[in-house]
Structures are given as structure tokens and as C-alpha cells.
Image 1 (cartoon, rainbow, N blue to C red):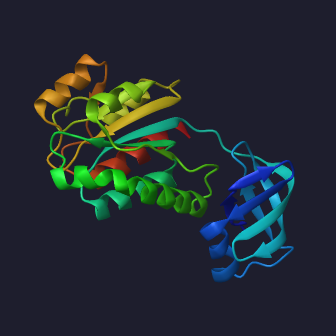
Image 2 (cartoon, one colour):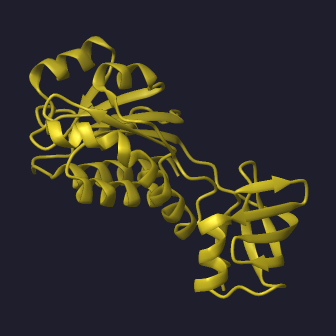
Image 3 (cartoon, rainbow, N blue to C red):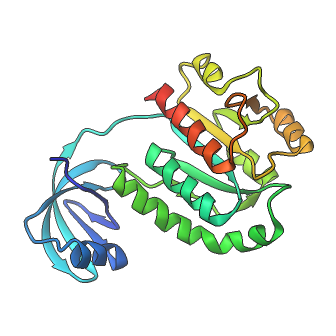
Length: 237
């Protein structure tokens, strides 16, 4: 039976802990007991952990052997801000697939009310990625940046940088990835509802980004983000 994985809030040598609401869920909802065994992600490795002490706001683990961890491409997702319920679904699923960083982007077509409210959502998104990371047995949750304007987001990305664009029909994402077999650092930029504007696509091109599409169908922003992430993961894992 596969052991549940938890991402530690605190690590000191061979002892790790979950704290606060994180611990409360394990103690109150899952009714953990001393002596139960889990996998604990410490930020540097995955280790076997035995529950040593249980309280409402703290669970302590004794750490044992280090367990093998998979290596994968580092994927940064530049995700334009769109309707929050659908955006959170995309964040959750892309986290499960294994993105390493999420940068919420204020694009030209981002609704002004959503842009104004997005900064207050960042902490909620971070909690969501922690939960999704543990559920999908990731070693670490993706870093979630504070929402930024597109010009700033462009400059934070490194490696192979790909902007998804409906106009790039001749350059499919999978074909582009297959031509870059040694790439281990990838940035994907996904536009808002209505897509990127022409001047935004021009700025991407001037900054050295490569355009690619997901085919002939027109996808919602959340579907495009999940589909593109899945294609990248399938190519590099």
C-alpha cells in the first residue's frame, strides 16, 4: 500500500513536524496515531517518518531512511489571471502534474476587478498547492509568486520559454519539445480569457520566447494550462 506523503513545516536533523492547520487536519480529520508511518518531504529529500507525538496543532515525526525521488524538468507556469474558481482548478491540477513554479500574470485582457483582487488570493493559492502537492506525492509545492504585470513576469523566466498562442498553428507544442530533448528548464505562458493581444505576442517574440499551439481547437485558459503542462511532463519524465 502506498504511504501518504506530507511536506514538513519544520525540520531539525532527524525530526520533522507539521504545525498549525496542517497538523490539525492530520490529527483531527485523519486521526493519526503515534507509530504510524508516512513519507515526509523535508525540502531536500523524501524520508520515511514515524509519528512520534500528536497534538492538535503539532505532529512530530522521527525521520528514517531516505527514499528515492524522481527527477523531472523544472516547469515555470506563467498563468494569466482569470476567473478565480477556474484558475484555482488549473493551479491545483498543474501542481498535481508537477510544475515547480507558478507566476500569476496581469495581462492586457485580465478583468480589472480580478487583477485588483488577485494579490489577496496569493496566500490561498499557496495553501492550495501545498494540499495538491501532498495528494499527488510531490516532493515540494510549487512556489507561487505574487501576481505581477506581464513585462515583469517575462523577465523572471529562464530556460526554454514557450508562449501558447492560437496563431502558432504551424508550431505544435509537442513538436517543439521533441526538438529540444536535453531541455530541463521550461517556462510556459498561458493567456487569459480571450487570449494574448497582438502587442503582447510581439513583446514575447522580442524577448526571445517561442510561440507554440495545442492544435486547432480553441481551449479555455484552464484547459490550455493543464494540457500544456501534461504534454511537457510526458516529454521529460
